[in-house]
Length: 221
Image (cartoon, rainbow, N blue to C red):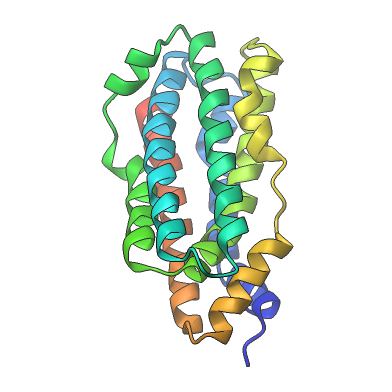
């Protein structure tokens, strides 16, 4: 029988080079030195608006598909987290002079939205265990980058702390969540092949890297 914790440790070790590329991305280096133009933050906010709006529906679909499984509390927790992210993103957008209409009318960048397209695929075709494995592999890098970005926005760009609550929210994510591990273990125990969990995590990290690449390209750094 495959152990969830051991599987996640193996996956994260295999994906270490990708995680390092995400955390050490040139976009973050440009932020720390104040070389990202402030206009680019409006692009970031618009992309996150579309990503979160999509992820909310995708996770809700998994709740509907797996409502009788032990993953329900985990999935509902993800939904609550995404809803809070929506609320804090609005504060960041307002600090940039963006209205709700500005967020809605921003155009998704294909390479930035690919992450959410995959989450939607998991919501429709995948399992709760695959989603949990993908998010568990991804959250450490995403959280680290949010921490770096939130700090830079305050120190280099003078944006007030309450306006960067979006980044603080994700910066405090646990690298490995026991609830997520229980969902993964339950999936393995009921026959979800480990290779599918590995594949989901690999794709998620690849799409995460694409997101930061797209942000750097849009910012011209």
